[in-house]
Image (cartoon, rainbow, N blue to C red):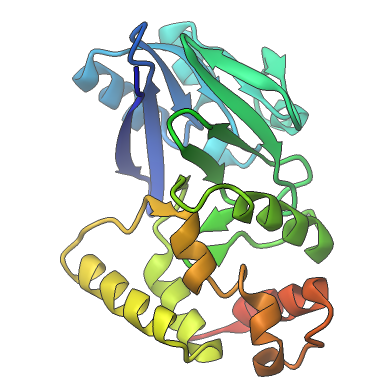
Length: 253
């Protein structure tokens, strides 16, 4: 049976997610950006939480672990770096599988934003929870990793089927679209940006996105094609990505 995803806004620009296995009714929280918000959503849904799936250790992703675990008894699963902020019941990394009832998540190592960041891919339902690695029209800042690490991580995600729904952790898309327009004048980004601006003007979320949509318009996945616009060699995808990321880091638009 398919999963259900309950998406909710919290903190200043985070999205939290509850995922329910349709066969057993067991639920997981993807990160715990705001313990109070997670617990309110659980109460409203009536779902039983059995897992917390952390993507990385940052406080707006794992800061609610202790409170949510105390209230629900959920098992905390994530990369080893989560121990910097919380207890961790099960450490996972590249290629591991996590079961939520009859739903299986494959762990993908998507380091770059942090040193051990992971994503959770449910192949059967064609969804992936990517934390702060890939955003709609963006990607995470390189706080602990290198451009080569992040390019490798983005390439892994880009290799997933185009139809896969991408659930990222922040509503950054309007700002990302403004940057994308500064380095890419292609039709795909112009159309996408108009859609994003209209959605945000109507206070509608721009998440989830899809792998196909990001491959078509996300400047970080398209970095080698934009190399000339950012003064990078076209034959070096890592250098092109690094240049696009550096341009975004100082962009003021």
